[in-house]
Image 1 (cartoon, one colour):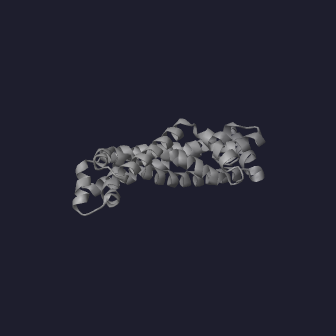
Image 2 (cartoon, one colour):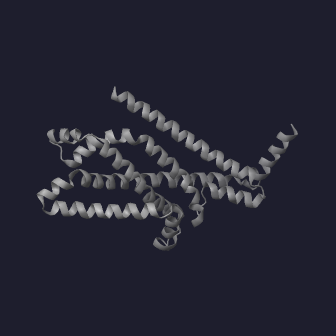
Length: 243
């Protein structure tokens, strides 16, 4: 009982007094905003880059034999995508975040939007390779089936290939999304009050690091657990739709 009483008093002093719990709420909302925004940006970039890279891998030989502008265009796009992947996967995300905030958007004071940009561009490089692996795993007969139905390449990708690819890469995508959620903890480097930063602010004002950081860790754990449960439910639905 004395331990519980002491814990209750500490919780009240650290989180309730001065309404310091609002830092955690603000930090969690900012973390969700950055994660959701970066997720959308990453998926869009990932699909586009994966489509270019897989198109080059599958069709470069036939396009080369035909010649013309098509082969030149796909070569240039593939080269640009490879440079993007090499650069973004070679630079630590915190370094790219600071470059985005202090160099690219040096006149902007909206740290959340800069975070969405930086994490989204960075995540897109990893999502692109996940999607490319998924597209390459789809049998070539599926592409031929799409063409036989009168679909062009974009329609074939949209209606036949991407739905199959999505089912195959869902577990890998989950890992990337979880990593993205946790990577946002470095957004405090550019002044964003995200979840980890909010815990540090409370700890600095109360001189108690145990409870604020424990609250931050539990919040991340709950968020990841909920995300994992949602994706697991989605996987089960996709498996049922195949039967």
